[in-house]
Length: 324
Image 1 (cartoon, rainbow, N blue to C red):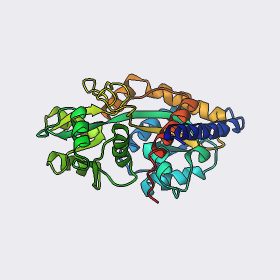
Image 2: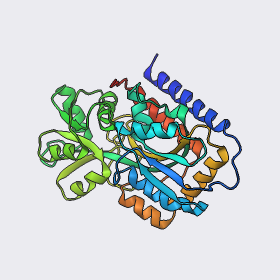
Image 3: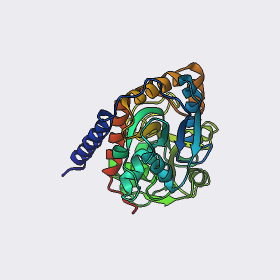
Image 4: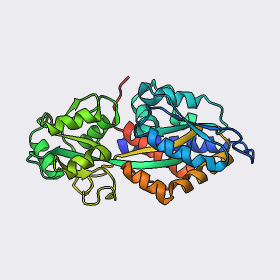
């Protein structure tokens, strides 16, 4: 069976489970919410998942009750995710999950302790951001095509920094290897900051990291940007070609955040939350804040978000990376 067929089959299976979760939701009370809503962030305060959650916490009081952000880091996000998976399905405990929690961890680990398709119902996608392939300013490579051509002529000679086995940066590298048909060596570091520092110092040939951390260094001329991982050019870096434009077919990596509810949460509650958050994030003030985070917001329905998560999970599963 081809990876493409198995990936599509996996996406359809996960989407069916999402749809089942929505279909079985009972009618919601019209007066929701009647007490504070808890937003569980499976990461430490101040990070790229925590900050969007705090924007949502400023929006939800429009429904008549406060929203409280609770940080529950650990296990790469699995601890916080499991706590919401077993919470009452009433709309008062919500997970603010990211790419790793909702797509990568379940794709690479059989011991995550939760299944995003079975345990959660999508509420709304919050933000999307992307990554950039960068090399040192002294690098001879001026384009992605240069990198690919060299790697094909010299298998295993190029190295690329990432943040460890099974994480999104690691899978981002593996996707590049698969889509471009090249052999490059991954070098693990403890954090994205350390990966970038290694590129700045010339210890590694390149890395693929988030826009927020890289754009200031690119603008200062300290790093050379080769391409962005979005499918289409992003307004966050409109002059950068995409990896697809640069010759790597079907290469797209999106880092996203979104709100999930326990499976069985009433459909009317899901719809109410979706409408409030979508409307709040589209105000000029919130749009400005998101841009400062290096992110964009795309209003969507719970179903659309579910389709997106299913496709992301299928893409990372198809790489066949396992860390258990």
